[in-house]
Structures are given as C-alpha cells and as structure tokens.
Amino acid sequence: MAPDQTAATTEPVTPTPPVITARVPETTPVEASAVDQAPVVFDVRDLSVYYGSFRAVRDASLQIRQHEITAFIGPSGCGKSTMLRCFDRMNDLIDGCRVEGTLEYHGVDLYDPRIDPVEVRKRIGMVFQKPNPFPKSIYDNIAFGPKLAGQKGNLDDVVESALRRAALWDEVKDRLKKSAMGLSGGQQQRLCIARAIAVEPEVVLMDEPCSALDPIATSRIEDLMQELKADYTIVIVTHNMQQAARVSDRTAFFTTEVNETSDTRTGVLVEFEVTDKVFSNPSDERTENYVTGRFG
Ligand code: ADP
Image (cartoon, protein in one colour):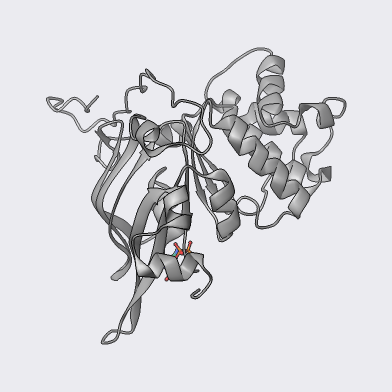
C-alpha cells in the first residue's frame, strides 16, 4: 500500500505489513512458469548507487520474488554488496551514498522521505560475511531484537523458536546462558541468522554468509537457507558460483564496465534469470565467460 499521499506533515511513515497471500510451489529446481507467478517483494527499476560522485552501480532493474532465494554473483567490486544494502537502506549509514531510480517494497517507495529506515530494518534482516554475535549470552543475542521491538515478559519461547528455525537449538539448548563468543564460526553464523529471524522479518539479506566458514559449516547454512525460504524471502551475495547454483532460484550476474576516460569502474547488471538458465544457457556472452570460469 502506498504511503498516505494526502498527509500534510513530514512525519515518518512505515510501510504497511505486506499481506502474504501466496506461496511459491515447492519445486526444485523451480520452473520458470511457477516462479514467475510468485508475488514481487522488491521491484527495482533503473537503480543507480553513488558514493559521492562515483557511480558504483548503474541502472539496475530486477525483481525479488517471495519465498525465493535470489543470488547476486559477479567479480569483486561490481556492486553486489552495494545493491544488497539498498534493500534495507543500510547505505543510508554511509556518508555520501545515495540512490537514483526506484526501489519499491510491496509497491511502497522504500526511499520515500517519509519512510522510517529503522522500521524498514525490522522487516528486512541482514546477515553479514563475518559472524558478528554480540558479546552476550546466546539467549541474550536472540532476545535482544524482540526486546528492542517492545516485546515484554518471558522470551523463552521466542528464543527457542528462532534457534530451532536456525537449526541451532539442539547444539545450544544446554548452554543458553553461556557467551555466544564460545561458539564455533558456523554456529555463530547460525546464531546470527537466528537473531535476524527472531524479530520476524519478511526478508533476510545475506552478504557472503559462508565466506568465513569451512565446507561443512557452509553446507549446513545452505541447507538452512533451503528450509528458511518456506517462510522468508532471501537475497544472497556470494562470490561462490557453485553456491549460487546450488541454493538459488534466480541469479543476477553483475560485472564492471571501465570508463577509459575517467578510469572509473561502474557495476552493471548483465543478466537476471532463473538460476538454471544463467548457468546452463546464459543469454549474454559476458555471463557465459564468467560462469564458465573464462573471466573473473
Ligand atoms: P562487491 O560487493 O561486488 O565486491 P561493492 O558493492 O563492495 O562490490 O563495491 C562496489 C564499488 O563501490 C567498488 O568500487 C567499491 O570500492 C565501492 N565502494 C563500496 N563501498 C564503498 C564505500 N563505503 N565508500 C566508497 N566506495 C565504496
């Protein structure tokens, strides 16, 4: 629903909670005809992102659909993380960063000046490359967000539910009051996922969530992502093409274009398609060169 256009004040408004009316049929791999029917969560049109006068991403257009995993791939510096941070307005926290173009969340302009970015970040969670638990107990890491959001009383059920959904409960249920810093890297990352979902977001953004993890911990996170997509919409930045091919329904391939005159590199979205197609029959030669390892 659009913000109240008639409002005379400049009070921040928050996007209306999306009404979730449809589920994507559970098929793997997802067929193009099925995924095309999934509701659009984010509609990105001609989005450019600047750091000061430097344009890091140019004119990207794509749609993120509900209960899908969308992967952003491409060589380092092509703007994948920059794009990801647009979805929860984290770029607002970077001095000089601004966007041009349109980014709608369920039809609401996410960059409408009346939208409160703090509210946005309650609906759209982020998991970072390096697990970043708070130096608190496992329990308090999970309870932190719900408490901040005003939940009172006993949060045991909330904590257990989030840890179960992040496939961590069995490993930590007897040590909830122990420091989260004592967990392994893979456990810490699942804790961070549990912390992100404890506030019941609709979308979880993941910025190279496995790049600091060993292959076993990586595989657990990938399995977890498959389970989570029944309840959440996931966007993942990964430098690992095999990971994108394994976990995602759709893939966006970005690359950098070099401006010879100014010697600047701008990120461009080359191809955005159902993942199977990107890896088996890409439309653009640049995508083919990248996914076959001839470039980047
Ligand atoms: P990727 O995630 O694909 O590696 P990034 O989004 O991190 O790419 O970076 C895209 C471009 O934007 C790069 O040229 C990078 O140097 C630049 N950039 C990223 N973050 C900032 C920042 N905070 N300030 C200025 N430039 C930045």
